[in-house]
Length: 68
Image (tube, rainbow, N blue to C red; front, top):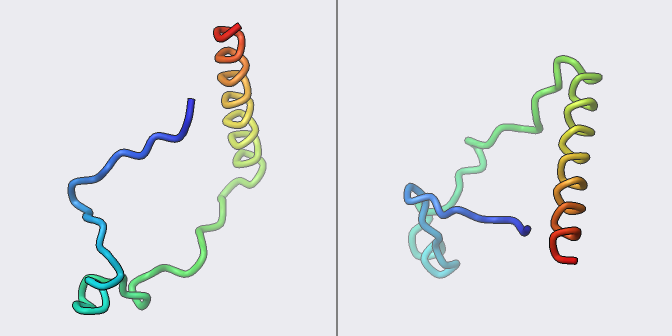
């Protein structure tokens, strides 16, 4: 199982040349947010992060068993 990227019809990839010719196509750094929000409950975040990692590991194990 690999990473699957789903194209979003709202966004269209542009080439560097297009961005240089039309700066309005480029991202506006002044509109970007700085950093990320602090987790309200760090212990809960760590627990959820561990559960997600375990899920990935278990899924990989199941795939390996199915291939055998």
